Image (cartoon, rainbow, N blue to C red; front, top):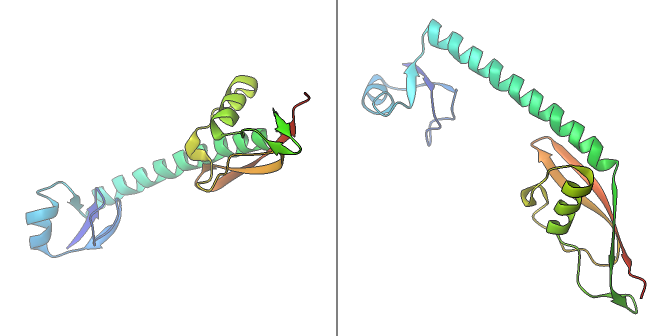
Length: 149
């Protein structure tokens, strides 16, 4: 029997997948727990409409992320740190970068947009990667200089 999954089912498939299962498995488990519906012409049309809507939302979110990427890549953030003989006291963290982007440039990002391997910044120029969407990654230029004493 062909069914359309309404939710992810372990070892069977993901939401909106069309799979073939035994009648008993469908009646006793999938339908009972509202995990799938029988595959009919009507359910197929509903599935196609849902997939088209999901695709449209995905495209819209991707377009917004690309617009945000262009804004971020046009920026160059400058920070200063106290230092002695080129050795910085402290570092620039994601929290400071997020605050600067929000307050000075009206750009909203969060700590989860930064790569997992982000290292707090010392003196120098850096290219910081921000993952804005599944398919969109922006590169932010950050320059950290020594403060004048």
